[in-house]
Amino acid sequence: MLPIDEFGDQLNEVEATEYDFIPNRPLLPGMESATVTGRSGSSRPLKRPGAATSGLTFLQWHTSAFEIIAADDHAEIMSFRPLGPARTAVRLLGLVHEGAEDYDPEELSELQRVKRLQDDRLCELVERGVTSTAFEPGPFNTYYELSNRVFVRVYLDAIA
Image 1 (cartoon, rainbow, N blue to C red):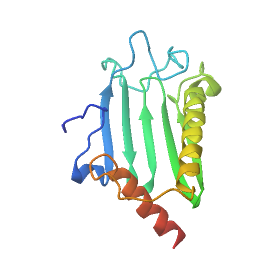
Image 2: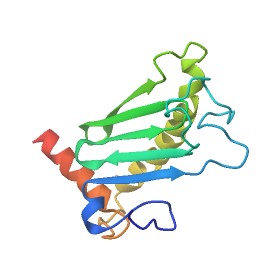
Image 3: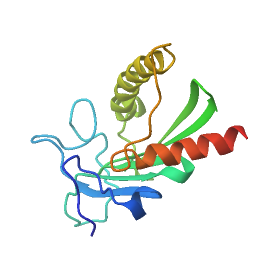
């Protein structure tokens, strides 16, 4: 297993250029799942019967700009496709156990919608800054922004 830094990410030169994999990230105390309420969104877990509760597992694959977030009761796959200098298409796919009948798709995806709204606002502020006449670009931080370098490469390949 790779060391995890203070932000919960596994950043090193080799892995960060391809992916981040963060297994068994604990949930906050009292939470059962990654939902807005913190309660499990389905009574049919995705994990194997008898397997220990694992919290959340993250897999972010930078070269194809997608990520998977898996909880015990559901998983979400998000893909990001650059459409232009100021637009990116985001697609969210939710997964539950094939036998699950007691889940609400809106409840399972609400946390991602809230997070996207927050991220969208942050992206808008960053875009205002980088399109300002006072902005002077600089290099990416080679430790914390390796995944951004890869995303830029994917973006430039997409518009070429």
